[in-house]
Image (tube, rainbow, N blue to C red):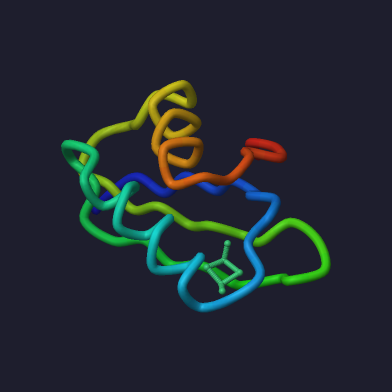
Length: 74
Ligand code: 9UX
């Protein structure tokens, strides 16, 4: 996608966490790629590529749906 969003997510500690977050974010309309740099000791960097801009609130909802916390949006 043409748009990249970068957020940081707390509470992710293993590859299954990565799968859950990736699945929820990929389900958002317009999202075509999600990549996570897992940081088990802090906030994991999550990069979301999409065709159109995704609202922060929508990203937050997806992250929380997966069971994690949005630490910050950059
Ligand atoms: Mo792994 Mo993540 O056992 O909440 S799924 S720690």
